[in-house]
Image (cartoon, rainbow, N blue to C red; front, side, top):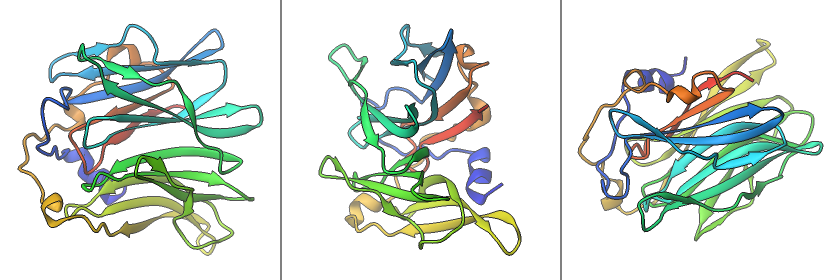
Length: 258
């Protein structure tokens, strides 16, 4: 267990952002499979009960994996997942904003990246300057690498390698933000000398204004043990728990049965 995971198990820091923008304390998204069709479902938690959307937010006949959900400083949500299209595993995306009725309105699904032959295990974080970061594993040769794309001026950048080029597998990135506002990514790297995986960490220093980098007063200590999944998600393939107010670590994969 990494230090990041251990801290998460104890408590989740929630930052004091506008309650009008982030009405839900937590959200969950998960993948269902029924008679060959795959779908992505969505639910929100108000502190007492879960409200599950009546309809799936996405349906496909293709295999779906690796969900990631993030909320930017203005409340816009980005959902990313892996979808097998023919022989390639690509990253797909949808965005959501609150409509006039206070409900989430999801955009049509579109391609996020087909950089590697296989693209999977995305992780999203938004820094306090408002820039989005998506890390994922991409197989561009015999082994997987960890890459990152940044949202700059509303456009996602071309993927960049997070680590030095090598001939060993690097995968399963988990992104977060430090208490000083820097972006942190942890991932699993294979060590040939020990023939085992170990955790690597890289920090991206953010040149945000000092005012934006100040940590807000903590308003809650909602922990993973305090939020159970909606009953609809209890037996599904994969579930992700998302804390819109938590800028340090937004999404946690709490069930992955692939």
